[in-house]
Length: 155
Image 1 (cartoon, rainbow, N blue to C red):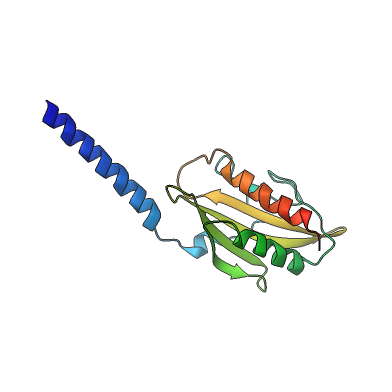
Image 2: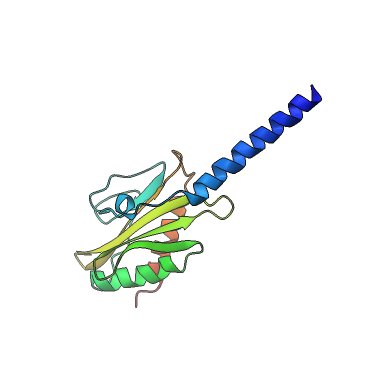
């Protein structure tokens, strides 16, 4: 009986390690994630949507062009730990990033753009998880941090 329990625990451990490894090495298809955040629906509870015409989070209106807002937002997002750009650039008007969780490496995808609105320009951010159904608010907190940083430095 004791050998059976030991073998079972080893098998469960190997399955867990295998699943975590699969999450870390799963390929990313940029075309699947590099979507227009203005036409997206809210991904909650597995993500967040911030845009001037509604969404899960309010966005600041900045006295700048959409290109300037996206340039500043790109710098803020790129400085986020474990985050890298996977598609797009400021010139195309849309950028998609992947941010991985610290311990298990779960990927979250965020697509950012900016639009002209009355009084200036506003960011648009769609952030969503890849695995699971709920992110316990992680994407919303991350996006809110980016928006707060953008609003705090209106230059």
